[in-house]
Image 1 (tube, rainbow, N blue to C red):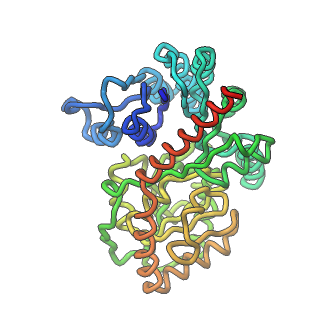
Image 2 (cartoon, rainbow, N blue to C red):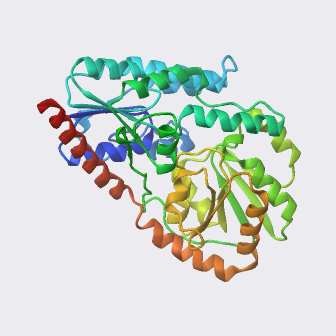
Length: 401
């Protein structure tokens, strides 16, 4: 069995490593990621640390192809002010897909990440491959309906990520023989749209204990942490409301991540009630997890947030919404809480419980670290290989029918 994997998302390095160890990887096509050697010292330290977090290891370098121009344009052009960030994503998705085609040749399976694989998948299929579409979000229709509701509620325009290339995504789903998603929650949004359940496979992500582990440095501040894009989809406004209404002494709401410009009017309403840190390299997130009291992710639509597993691995209790796929990894009441979406009162109640009872917080922290030890990338890799073996058996059975 030979597999070509195409992804511009860093954590798929783990899938590439698993396939290579299993003897299945023919080629891994990715974006800007160091393979060997030291990074140039002329690069700014922050950029060097970010790139180090993307380093590819334990993969035969001869099998790696890096397609870096699309990401440079995606990140660089919006900074000129000539195009929006969403248009930058559009450029990246189409250009990456088009450029990847030169490295697609005969294989048994072509596995790609949703939004960057329509043209390359068509070529692979012409060459006889079975196609696997790996989707990191819910079905576009599901997310669009929810965010339209948020837009009306907030009185601002809410950007629905992927609108510019939604038709491309739908065509990718239709051409795929199999669809892989990270949670049962995400899978259900596809079956609700009529996709056969037998075509959809669930493989939850993991956390890397070498990057994320408990080094508790909690000070006397009760720190509520949010990590992710600061936007309506992540439900940040419900967290802002909860904390502003609680008005807890010796507390802090810390938002880590890039703020969506469209969300600026909402942040302005709560000015002075939170502290904002911009985009942080993944390898530096550990210090924020270890200096916080609880991670809160009240998302409206979130197929599987890696930050939840990373926080658990650092011994940090979590509060997540029912529309966060990683809720499936949280043991409600043991290492965190799962609350309904848009429920500010439930959110306030859980935050207050952790604030008032350090004993509960400590017990949950220990349970969180223990739970995370079961949620590793090694487990993800084992499930991926079993999944491929199932794909292979199914393909052979179809061929012999």
